[in-house]
Length: 161
Image (cartoon, rainbow, N blue to C red; front, side):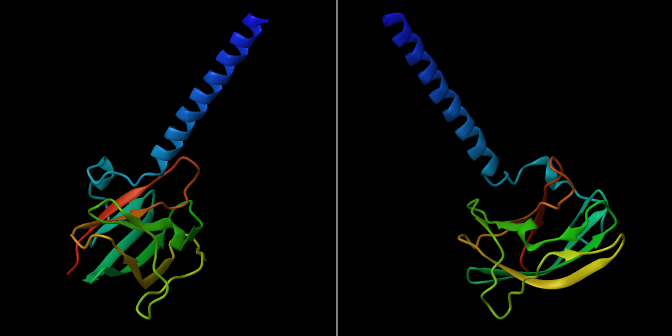
């Protein structure tokens, strides 16, 4: 009887430890990427700042900072296996590593619904905005194009004009 209780207790503790390890691993995947990652190397696209992921290109221009609001224009060209561009694919990371989604409640801040486009088509330019908690530049535009389950994240360093 005592042996069974000890075995059950050991199994319970093992499951709790495994659950905690899984939770910490999941949480570490959710943290914004460090800005010194190798994803920051220049891509084969011009003019910059831009990123090219397997033929799916994103250009950024007219980056401006107004208080805690960062505005910019983005333009896409798809010559890849990806089928769409989506606003959920973009986040802005400020110098305090705070990640922000697109702002849609301001007159200067647009968003779009998922845009499907054929091979080689352009989409944009689109004026978009992000609210930051730290206005210290530069900022990192984090792009996660939909190119498969285990593919592709790209960081683009942007500096306000």
